[in-house]
Image 1 (cartoon, rainbow, N blue to C red):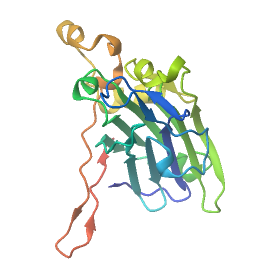
Image 2 (image 1 turned 180 degrees about the vertical axis):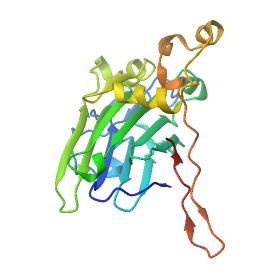
Image 3 (image 1 turned 30 degrees about the horizontal axis):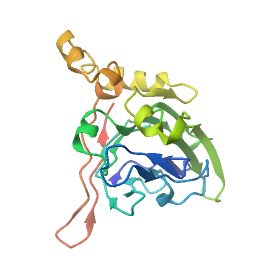
Length: 249
């Protein structure tokens, strides 16, 4: 949970990455070969626990929240992960949200092979005038959705991307280790953000490229990191203190 500058009139932009199937194959678990999915389709009213990762950018109060839900194996075993999250905001109120969330039921070696849910999104509230816009890169699995909710309770769909279908519930094993793919009407907005605010990133040498994991070699997600967001703390008066998002531009 972090603080951003409010943008009155922009409402709440919320989204999630969810698994459409009820079960998915997880060969890395010695006790259970399957994990539970979310068993749903696109839904602006889905609860946070009906997703692998969910996020909220509340432009009215100036708060960003990211949540990774517990992973459940078919045998009942459950683990909670600790996602890597980065949040930036520019002078126009645009927010860049970068999420990297690995399955806590998978061994460390799987996480080292880039088997994780990843998204790097730029959210433009357009000053609170009209619908927001969401562009960037996300993993091919699972499904992704982003909506905007206004003060009157109405909801606008900003982005949906159906997970790529794979046989036998192998979507995570096949889709997650691959490079991220562009989403949104103007995915180049993310490249513009990187070039403007992080011009020194992304310039890798030959050695660095060779050492990258083969399946995700060339994935810009890893070439343009964002400082990890710290957790909220307690002030001297016992109140919760939210860290600030990184300001750019």
